[in-house]
Length: 443
Image 1 (tube, rainbow, N blue to C red):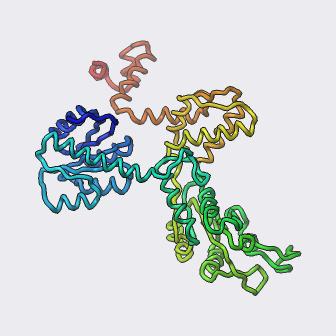
Image 2: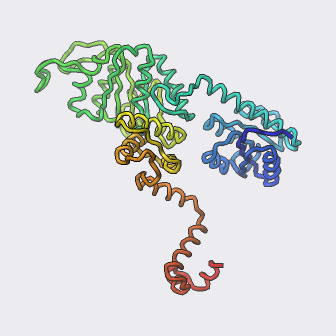
Image 3: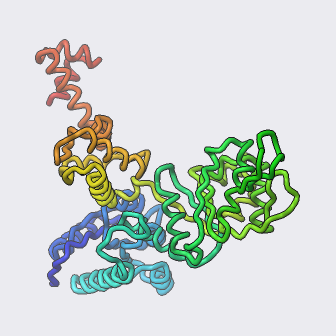
């Protein structure tokens, strides 16, 4: 029997309770941390909650098969390995499992030695894949000026590298506060035109009547108040990059003008008939679903396809909770220097609450909160009570939602009894049940 030093987490999925118990017992004896599920639906919920290194799945299961689970894991979990077991062996099934990404295929019945050998083979594949993925990582938690070591952020780094090596237009999507402009700057400053300007434009912050003039410039006398000619953002970004943030806020008429720039690489200043060359890379960003806007007739489909030659989706902070502690440390260090105060530390309880919070405002909200805490508290340690009450309440309600209905009922009965000094008749009246029912529940 092998001895296992690393505490790998293994999820066993099989509709047979006997098989689950045997596999669980054997794997635990080797030092693995084992979870079990009797259906694919249960397994997917487990994968969302717990980091799993290896999934061992049965082939034939009711409703959803092990083949479907292999496909799901491969599509969603880069650092999780898979192996399949089955009592209905076939060449076709084995080939399909391996083609979809299973590291091994084990036929029932199998010996303990065969199981352990197959598991070790799968975990070896996992270690090799992780080593390849982590190759080139440095000790610094930040790349391209973006702080993070989570898998989703590493994926972003990979896409930035590819985008920086081309001049193709890029559409960056993601919720407000996720750092879309940081991604755009990273693409520009690591590309071949990094020596030329990067010009950010907030399309939603410029009135519609002025946006055309701001983007393309205007000639003297072209409209009331145009007392002199003025260069627009496109000309200012010549040979460089223009970043059109909140592109979804532009009108359909403005979208037509932008489409011409993308198609013909030329534009006209307001009030001028002479075309000017637009030697500019366009990176656009939005926190809206542009496909929904297209369906509503609020955004041009042809412009969408022109903008999204490359598409980068920046994940919300709640999907990269592994990065929260790194971000807190970075922000605290930065503001300590700015405020010329001693370094601030966050207690383990404070960090636990921050990691569990949903962060609807994403990285921007986290940064603002760290800055506010450092301004309002002179102590060198920020503890849980120093955090805003809504963050602590969020954790409390989240914990409450994990309780069963029976647990909630028991707590409520106890609280009602305590409030009436143990008077069962009065408690039963408040609860809306008779004394007999209350007695049964108290048992």
